[in-house]
Amino acid sequence: SGIVLVAINPYEQLPIYEQDVIYAYSGQNMGDMDPHIFAVAEEAYKQMARDEKNQSIIVSGESGAGKTVSAKYAMRFFATVGGSASETNIEAKVLASSPIMEAIGNAKTTRNDNSSRFGKYIQICFDKRYHIIGANMRTYLLEKSRVVFQAEDERNYHIFYQLCASSSLPEFKDLGLSKCWPIPVLRW
Image (cartoon, rainbow, N blue to C red; front, side, top):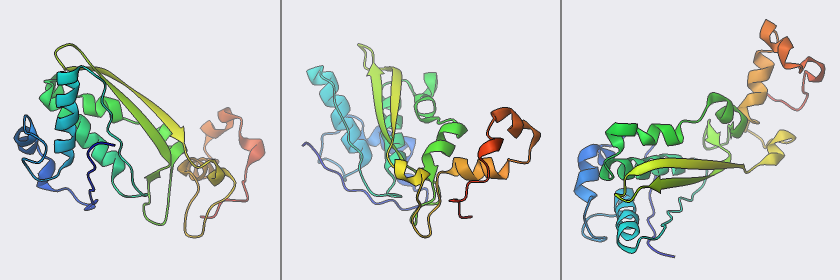
């Protein structure tokens, strides 16, 4: 294991993730500045360039801890220091999840009303000048049990509620799902 950063989700926007902060951490050595996701990203970026080897950043935590947001900030850092931010808006492209994917993989937990129940593996590809040239994202559905069971005060995947709410619309007939409704395990 390399560097470990413990971050706390403040549940609000703070000015510590803005463009000027990215530039402040860019080119700095680990430990020269306060612990920050940008310091971790800078160290990975520097080692990738220096050693010409792949680097990994593992973002882990409980539901609602801010894992997805931390990954977004790391990608924003890479896009900015790699000169790709304005050219490709890579952060938005990499993390843009379709509403269908979010509906299928997000659920209400006791800590987060829209908690992603996916594990994500994001691979960012750089060219020889260390500019981002592309990315791949693989998702892994973590809680298959939610399809048939839900804990007290939690909701199943959003897709079930969205389908129930739209079952009376004319477009619903085209989905071929009318024979399986209503689903008795859903609690509103």
